[in-house]
Length: 333
Ligand code: ATP
Ligand code: LTN
Image 1 (cartoon, rainbow, N blue to C red):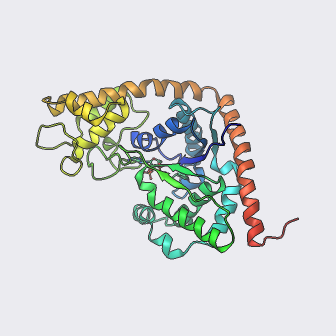
Image 2 (image 1 turned 90 degrees about the vertical axis):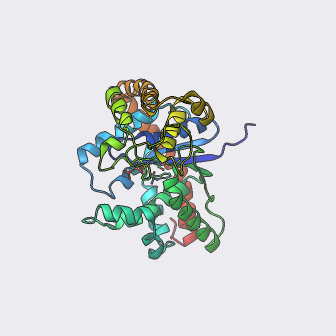
Image 3 (image 1 turned 120 degrees about the vertical axis):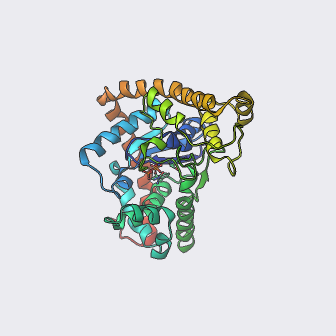
């Protein structure tokens, strides 16, 4: 009999366009892991509305993100792809988990503090509760591993704390998940300020490469990337943050090792190096963009993927939710 695969869960919010940071930190690894694990890849629209969204755009970005997952190589025949709000179990489990989470813990979350500062006019309860909903996402599927960028580590830690707390209060109910972080590229920096993470919602779009940027834009942005006053292409994140960030991007997009890349650019100026990185990224993104456009023209196919995904997600999640409801004493009929 085939050994049962472990379960993997991850998600991205359908906000703004995705950057190559999201691709390197998350989606690229999803593709590599999809044969080894039973994978659930969600589109986290319920998380997205913790920051105000334009309804028509949210709808469009949801479908466009699904098409991007598939265009990047995530295989809907192997993985369960679905929209978070299509499975009501997420909101239901989040409510229960809220009663196992302390307000102080949520107030201390880095992302909550950052987003509160950024959206000071709308510090809503959802923004604060974001990690609990994320814990519900993960725990519903008895997830073993969660591949994400390093910025999500704190959320993963709190998910583990909540799971352990619940298991100790009753009896083992949830699998306690582990995070998987990429070796290189767990935190891609902004091209203009590599100390900040490259973000979809950065103030200056010139610091981020979006998955739908065209070739000229990509090359122009890389040409302007911050380096240092030295000339050596060497991986040294402490002292050469800009160059190291570009090397991480280059290796992620070419599959070469850091050492190979350093050798390739030995003695070559930063100008040529930046151009080479830009070209490598543009070459890789062009076919992804074309495939995404082709998929988006076939809405019936994409809707079919989401329908199947929602059914399987509900089936698996509902089993966990029922267990939880029984354990906490909800009356069953
Ligand atoms: P926003 O900037 O709008 O808050 P985001 O760019 O952080 O969003 P998310 O949807 O929150 O995007 O994250 C999706 C995935 O991409 C997560 O796994 C996250 O860890 C990863 N990720 C985001 N930015 C980076 C980055 N700069 N480097 C590596 N991974 C990243
Ligand atoms: N908060 C995550 C997106 C997300 C997620 C999840 C990631 C929502 N639910 C469950 C992993 C597992 C982010 O990347 N910003």
